[in-house]
Image (cartoon, rainbow over all chains, first blue to last red; front, side):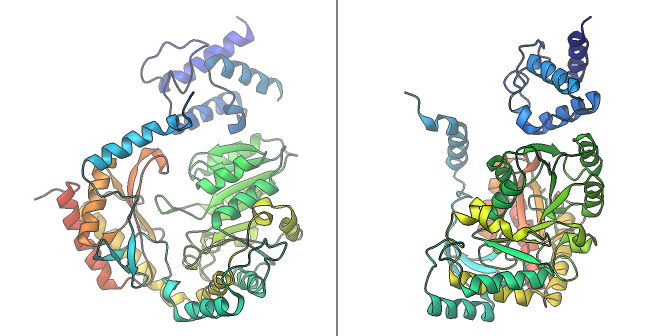
Length: 82
Length: 402
């Protein structure tokens, strides 16, 4: 299992409690359109990701992240910078 | 060709659906005559005003009105210029002096609105590699200040000290950091745990800006706000406020003890590139601010009003935004927008004006009837308001009818 795969598994586990509609999550799944998250859900989810990986994802960076795949890569980049 | 207005269609539909139910448009009320800080004629009916931010009731204060009339006669209707060009009159300096005295701080800078004060200060002091850490429930002017600047923005859950501290600890130690908080949050009328938040911010080497728009004149021994009340005002780097609430006119300001503060007058775009306030406005503001310094009796009566309305509404069975009254704002939580609009209209028919707040301005998608009390509301008016809430609640189905 690659580092990215491991990271992906951890992120998918964190998405699960917020996946109220039971959408099948792939790298192409979009947070706003497919998972239909509102701003408060996004805040809680981002906090969960930040705590899990001990990173900060600023609102500026969040604006660039639309899909699960983009998030996995962004978290990887932020971890590498630590 | 695409119509640029297409993105507003969901809101247009929601508004049309609401109005087609026959309800009075809650966002299009006209005050036909204003009799006092607490009473106006709306739709031909005497209406108790419970939705203004006239907390200290200064809009009809004889000294305030006279100062404005004199300035209008002496200096004309407007300055027609920026503060850094031809727009600084003696009245602007006097107004800034009144603010320095009120807050006991070294510097004061007056903006044309409170919105512009946040827009200007936040966007100017936090640059590209700096971080702004802010409460998720911050006012639109704070978010817009962030959007106008280039800093990295980090939000945290409302009033959560631990969430703030955790984020501060993860930021690069050498980076510039500005923590932005509010004393009173205007939607639910709740206050921030500033004592704890300022402590964790300072420990992380951050500067702290507190918007005290809804507390000025009312909260704290000298009316300096929640930071004064909680004993941390000396650790606050910047206080932002407005003249459109307790001061009773329009305008905004920032006060600070920062030794280099005055340079902001040259680099802050929402200060430089706009016309300064009319002389009559700064004259009313300066007079009002100086009178607020001696407003302890008014402050005590406003607290009485807040406690009575909060307790009375709870007794009637309404769900409120805070467990205890924390400010002059009491938010009544409505089940949904339709019920909220019906209740709002029923109250107007009873002769009470409150503000209807709806998503996205509200936290967690709530619909709220926001009551803002005034020091000039008499105890009898508060009882009258409670009676009207009871009748309107039953008429609109927000309270049980039996």
